[in-house]
Structures are given as C-alpha cells and as structure tokens.
Image (tube, rainbow, N blue to C red; front, top):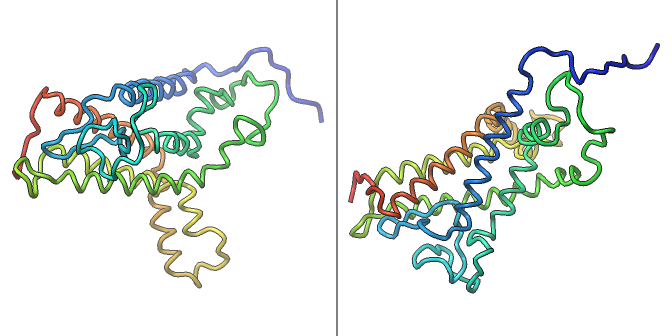
Length: 260
C-alpha cells in the first residue's frame, strides 16, 4: 500500500465549513469580554433591597465588597483593583469550562485548529494529543468538577437568600426567577459533565449489583446527551443574570415584585 495522497489544497470541501468554528469563536469571545469587564468593574453587583448577588462576584470574601454582599464573611482584606472580587472561584470555574469535554471540541476546532473541521487540514506539523503542554492540563478536569460542585452549592445558597422582601421577610420578584433559573441550569450543566457520569457509574463490572449507582448513572446519562446545549445555555444565563442584577442595582428599572 502507498502512503497518503498528497493534496496541495487545505481541503476539497466546497461548503462553508468555516462557519461553525467562526460562530463558536465569536460566541466564546463575546462571553470572555463581557465576563472579564464585569469581573473587574466592582460596581452594580449587589441589590441590597432584595439580596440579589451576581454569580460573577460570589462568594465575595474581601473587605472591599459592598456591605451585605459577603454571605460568608470577609476573611480576606482589601484587594487592589487588578484582582477581581470573585477571584477565589473564578480560576476554578474557568478551568472547569476550559477542560470540559464539550468545550475541548469547541475550541480545538475554533481556536487550536486541531482540526478546524472534518476533512480540513490543520496547521500543526504533528499531533501529540493531550500528552504535552498545554493540552495535558485537560487531564485535571475531574478535580475542577469537584470545585464546580461547591460553587453550585454557593450559588444555590445565594439564590435562596435572594427571596428577601423590601421590608424584610420573604419576598419574590422577577429577579428570583432569573437567579433560580440560572442556578438550576448551572446544576444541570455541572451534573451532565462526563466526569460526573464516570463517578456515578464508572469502574462497575455489574450494574445489577449496584442498583442505586445504576439509577444515578442513568439520570446523569440523560443529562449528558444535552451537555453541549447546557454548556451554551449556561453562558447565556450567566450573562443574563449578571446583566439583570447590574441594571436593577444601577436603578435603570425596578425589580417587578410579586410578593413584598
């Protein structure tokens, strides 16, 4: 048998194969730009009347945080402006997203170009997979998953505290629907992770001998098939939640209240 056919063209495809990678690039870039700006501005991230806290600043553990926004105290002193107030968890959440199995496919094709599309040549001279830097870092995804679980619990706690009325006691408004919906989708995205699927059902030789773990595995597997959709949806809900809190906190419009 001879070697591979030598074709000078990068690809013989005539369709717009470049469109999906381009859309992925634009979507990820838009989120990164928005999230970066919002993480550093340090304004309009807390609504004291209703205890709305944007997830980009949770948990806020520094004395630089506005009064009331620190649900877990302020064990960290004042921070200089070049450090985001949510710096405790932001690197781990970024690591969880970057090493996510779906996002690997997304930015391998749109950023790393390995390859950018099926039957399209890649610019790399050779392929080393995830055995060398920088891609070897992908192997720590399972550890980022555990941190993501903790962050989801913190976001859930924030959403529960947000059921607060203007005059005290229980309150319920449009912001609560947005915050709770965001948390529910974040949980769905986190639990649909491939690492979670492996934790619930991996290393088992016989599902029949482990009915509880089998049931958990089947539930996670149902979510897992929607992991791509949840990955993009949660980027959107994070921006929506932060934008809503910012607008209400800035006084652009009041939060529509249903109770108190």
